[in-house]
Image: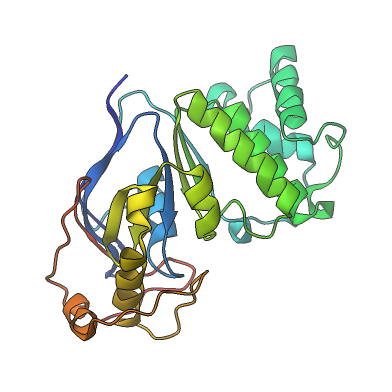
Length: 283
């Protein structure tokens, strides 16, 4: 298997001619488990959409290892929960790449779906309409769909939002299972304590990678502070998930505001902007 599951070469993504991820270069190693963190609107979801091909690059490329399949789980807010479907229908959608949209499901397929629902604690929910599920139950069902896809690369956009603590624990266990199976997993997350505890690698975004590497290094206080200052140079209302250390460095704010500044690290370099849900902002 290729050493790199994903390769970014001068990848620039955006909306309506406004760049949202700037000139990203680097690789994601096969079998790695990476958290993508940053303030709201820092390009995390944009990067996910660029990797999966939902969003076409403005410049550069995002390359996937030959033959590697991608399972992509968007944010719940992007899903139409009013769609008249049962849990079994939602999970069975994971079979589409294998069977096709109109393909007949085999007894083996039905058993695969049943095992996936059991793995996420949703056995017995097959006939439940998805619009009757809680946030946690829906996310479990969506994880079952990812299980059924059996992909080499798994992209999860904020999977822990609007779910209870027990569900978070169970979903983290599934993510670790995928990691143990040498799948490449990238997860957009906000809870930095959760990231520190469970994710070996972290990409810290703030209109570019502020840090990208081992989590213990990437989430050092000085990196979080630099990410916040860089983000605040563009807009002043960016919420963060934990208090930042009180440090001084008045030159950083103006320095980070400059488009031309590039930060070098072992994975690559880039600038970054706003996620789709908050909309792009021109500098």
